[in-house]
Every structure is written in structure tokens, then in C-alpha cells.
Amino acid sequence: MKHALNRYLIAMGGLVLLAAMLFPAPALAHGPSAGGASASDIQRLFNITLAIAIPVFLLVEGLIVFAIIRYRRRHADEVPEQVEGNHMLEIAWTVLAFAIVAVLFVLTLRALQTDYTVEAERGENVPDLTVHVNGYLFNWDYTYFLDDGEPTGVKTTKKLTIPAGKAVLLEITSRDVQHSFWVPDLGGKVDAVPGYTNTMWLQVDEPGLYTGNCAEYCGLNHYNMLIEVEVVEPAAFDAWLAGQMATANEFVPVGTDLDTPLPEGDAARGEQVFADLACNACHLPEADQPSGPSIARMMRDAATQDGYTADEYLHESIVQPCAVLAEGFTQCIMPQDYGDRLDAQGLADLIEYLKTY
Ligand SMILES: [Cu+2]
Image 1 (cartoon, rainbow, N blue to C red):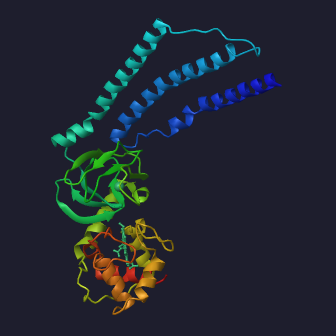
Image 2 (tube, rainbow, N blue to C red):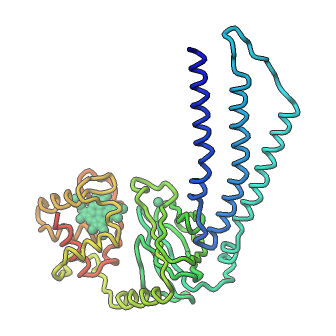
């Protein structure tokens, strides 16, 4: 009976080991792809580390299994051979481990010093496009500049659009706390630090949508501080940028003045604005969260404010979010620049959308 149990345990151990041995395949698949110029350096380092790790893993696990089987207790009264210490072995695995760590250390230092950071700092390369990346609780704003640094007036939230095969310089900073800009397929993590600008070159050859996330825990909705990088063919990018610039030039911000009359709103367009400005990072349709009341709750509050119509209350809540804090909230964490980011039509559309709840 006991023997049967032992054999069963050994068989189970073997299965687990086999499963673990198959693990490197998915691990490889999840390494950074060579999407961006810096990603290929990171990928190389990742593959080297993996190549060292696989034999170490097999050796260690193999020895464990070998020891379990070879030195198992065969009789109830058997005491296995007792061995204590082995200088040669101890020296060997100390030196070997040190050598492996030393090699990885040097390779990592080299990967950190790749052309993309060095040149970005020296200003040797002229970028085809410069984008200011500004992180804040819980989103990213992107402001676009031409190659010579001339402002385009174009600003997007959450989604960064760039041309394929061009050298894009990202200047990354934060408006509030520390964040970290990370799109695994495109490059390494770059910290977004308030009051300081980090640079990163991004050259992505393959058009497509690459996603990432803030990689520095920053608060309640950190998990939802998503990044989308849309890489399009250069011609499509130029058309997109020209379209955005045309709209940006006509753009008249609604401002924070509550007396500004609003045109007729459109709920469908408002839903788009809600997503574009990433209000949904903090506000869900039905469920209240610590990061913000649900839209349903907003509408209940809007309907019951003394001295305000629902429209007036929503208008004020969006352009002057700190004027009145919704009950249960003690901090004003909602961005205060929507008066600059919205025009009268956008605000009217947004309010119309909220009113569908
Ligand atoms: Cu963050």
C-alpha cells in the first residue's frame, strides 16, 4: 500500500516536471517582440537569460528527481546514507552562480546603454515626430510636435498614433505621481516622473495596435491606466495628423465659465468623447468605484441638486470638478483641465450621453 503511494507520488512529480519543462515555450512567446528599436535589445537579453535558465532549471530539477528516486527509503527501518558537506561542489556552485550573475549584469548594463537612450539624450538624432507623453491618475495625454519641435496643437488621450518606420521621440513625464510608460512589445519601461523628462526612441516597423499599461503602481485605478499605440503607414499618419491639426486649429475650448451657452448635444458622439477623454478610466456606467461615481449615480445626484438643473450640475461637475465633491469623496482626483480639452459642442455631447443613464 505504502509502495503504491510512493510510486503514485513519483509519477505525479514526473508529470509536474514534464509540464514545467514545456514551460519555456509559452515563456518565449510572451517575451517582448522586436516591434520597436529598443525592444530588440531587450528581446536579445531575454533570450540569453532564458537560454541560461533552461539548463540550470533542468539540472536542478533533474537532480531533485534523481535524488528522490535513487535515495528513496526502500524499507520502513532503513536509514539512508548520511552525507555532509562537499567543498568541491560548494565552490563549484558558488563560482558558477556568480559567473552567471556577472554575465547577466554586464549584458543588462549594455542593453541599458543602447543607442536609443544615448542618442536621445545627446540630441544627435533628429526625430521625425516628437510626442510629449504626460501621465496622470489614471491616463496618458499625448501632445504632438513636428520634427523640428514645432507644436501641431494636436493632443490625444490614451491612444498614441505614430507612423511606421519613423523615428519617434517620446518625452515622458508626469503631472502628479510616478507612473511608468510600458508597451512590452515596443520597448522597455520608462518612468514618468513629475518635474523630470525621460526620453525614449520609438521606431516601430510593423503597423498595428500595440497595448501596454502603466507599470508603476500609482493608485486606485492603476490597473486601468492603459496605453494604446496605433502604428499606421506614414501616408495614413500624415492624413490623420493633418485632419487633427485642422480640427485643433478651429478648436475653441469651452472654458470653466458656467454661463457659456451650450449647443444641442448628441449622445452617440458624447459616448465617443467619454471614451476619447478616458472618463471611463474612473467612471463605470453602473458600478460606483473608489475612483469615481458611476454614471447612474451622477445622474441621481444631478437630479437632486438644489438650485441646479441636471445640465447645469453636469456642466459644473465636468469643467469645475473640485467645486462640489460628490458625497463620499474627500479628494478631487478628477482632472481639472476638461474646460481646455472640450469645446462647447463636445461638452454638450458628453452631457447628452450621461443623460442616457
Ligand atoms: Cu500610473
